[in-house]
Image (cartoon, rainbow, N blue to C red; front, side, top):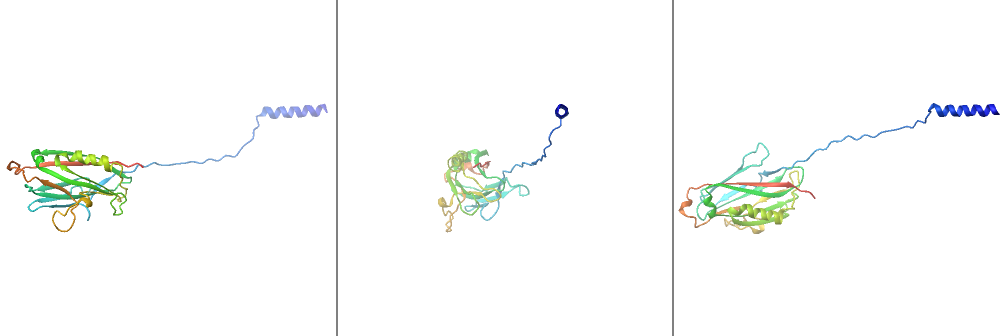
Length: 227
């Protein structure tokens, strides 16, 4: 019995000192990914509901997109042969062609040339927004005043009425620059409402305003819309 107990003790010690362990099966899961950013791209649109221009008798208005081969972000507008009591009107459409919702942020207006003309020019306009692109106008803003105050008046309308109004992406949401239909008048007496931006020249503009040229640049900035 002593021999057996000694043998068992030796075997136990041998196993303890040999470092023998127990194996366990294992498995792994791997994740590989990529993150891509979207695009904020609001551009001018040329279709049946936008880019229209008209004027009173003898006024020669014109408007065209000047970068059609690229993303149309630049538009040229000319209102020629204005005179006291005359008017010109135009309507512009912009569409969200990006991949994320967009909203109005601010506008910037710069004038150059014969700035004395500003004393005799006024405007009437607004913004109409179709957020879904379903043909239903969801939000409008109407504003008017001296052309010289266009930047201040437009930005106040954005802050008060348009700041949190989004336009859905992928060519669905859009906006129209022009007097909202509910405020529009039949200026040409043709039985239809003229929902355009209207520029008017004061009937009291003096002779000193003949053959002058006023240049202006309107820059509209947009931001991504976060729910």
